Length: 243
Image (cartoon, rainbow, N blue to C red; front, side, top):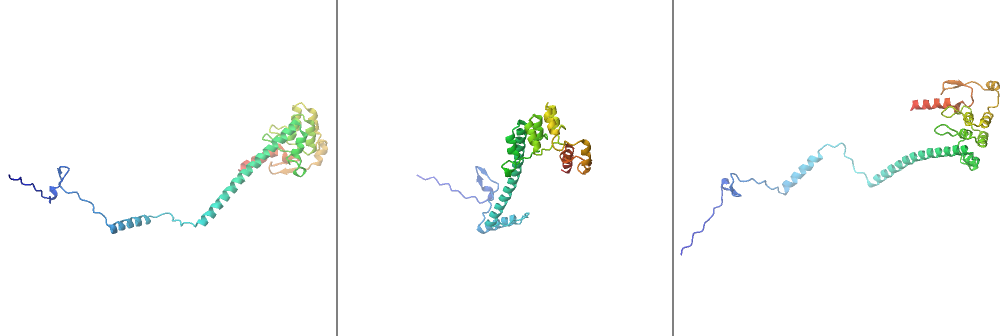
């Protein structure tokens, strides 16, 4: 019994003879040659060289660790100083406003003990408050006491030198006028008869000399002109124009 002859295959040599996925290829696929070690090194060196040649605004040299720490501490100190300065100023203004409110309330309530504590100087154990302090509406302790008819508080404040001549609230009324409007004529008279208001108009005009105020651009004879409403308004307007 004869054996069937084996089929032999001949490797393809022509590019047109290549088959792939059951389809004859017209041209063999070209494979990219693999880079050897030297070629790969040359490629990356060229790539790094291109990046390093790119112009930069400025190449900063790394600072020593000690210098960085000193600079950081200095910046933190400056920031802390600036923040504490702003907070300190705000705290000072808030404390002043609170003090003014306490003085005005004590005057309105006729609390002489509290007034003494708030107005006495620090050396005497007091709070060192301003006897002529004003709130946002320009009310002074004397105005509050006079408007409330607190005769003892009015007498005490006048005795300590509280100003009232030419000192008016935003509505243009002084302490005496406020007392009259509230129905306390005795308190109003007490204010008007206080030191500086007991002389006759004739003697007063002779004893006061005429002076010129640059802020108001006007002449005046009142010794309390600097605390008058007109002067304070002129001063505020001048500061606003400067700002």
